[in-house]
Length: 185
Image (cartoon, rainbow, N blue to C red; front, side, top):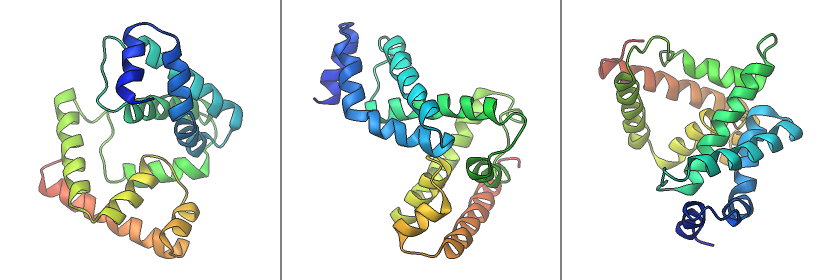
């Protein structure tokens, strides 16, 4: 079923919308949750909560991309579970990738207004748009989807060490770009 048809089911308050969303994007959402949580039960719960959140958000929201909309919800929910779970102990996988990226980007506590956060988002999107497509995919897979360096290295036909060096270089490039754009780091 096409996304527009699924969204119309949400607007009609037809529960088939959840089933269709689950069938079309359930595996995608599970992979996002799994990459952040590495726990089957927590991942499944995030996907179920995603479908519930979508039901509550549509309408009035009419997403341009149902896949991105559901993926974003899943990621937010998985990060909430991750933060709750790791409040006392750190998970090396995603915590490390987030720490690497946070060195270059100010925390939301440093950003006083949502407008500034939007400008930061636009700057990062602009920088990502300037990258060659394979580099952009690697960066987003690592820092948005939470793929491990080992997984990405296999997909990119690189050694994990070489990929780690590449990601480090990309983070430095991002930092330089943000500084040139006037973002306070």
